[in-house]
Length: 281
Image (tube, rainbow, N blue to C red):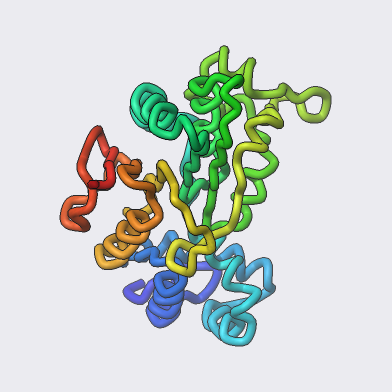
């Protein structure tokens, strides 16, 4: 079993592993370490079954001749989409108590707020941000507020646009928020809820590979990019953080994941809270 090819449904050699993990890194920046070999096999085995292929060597050959259409399926298969509403709640408390009041004061004339959720997965993060904005910005102020939500996985973007979730998976949402911001499904949709139309209008979901060109110009007042950079090597992290800085408004905020840090990556931000950074003047 030294080469990992036995006791598997599909033959999976070291050469297969090296080819596929290099392809993943080249196109997404995600570093697939040696200990993720079984993970890569299990996720891509689904593609072999769907395509009726017998070995990963056949899949490699298929990719060479069908890369344009298959690469999206490969990326969707290997990306991780662990998320929940109001995950890392201190971020949303800081957004409500510090960032939004500051923006309401600083941008009183412009009345425009832009937030980017980078790596939004199935939408729980941007919808959580939208709920906080709805609660903290008085409706009579008539502000222009938009949230851009992006992810490399086109499947999760499609799911997020629908805004439909199983009620049992709505951990972290209070009963008051559930009643205010969600519609309960009935009949065939019993047990499900849907984000209300007003919140859904606030969020624009778009597929985006963070390593490729970014069509948006900014500036953003706040960027959430949480638990994304952990999958990249340090050089990619540095480039990404610099690109975030270039799209932030002066003194804008960057929220990152609980196991991430900007230490050693950049000197353009000040740490102002637990994994909360602010662009230096």
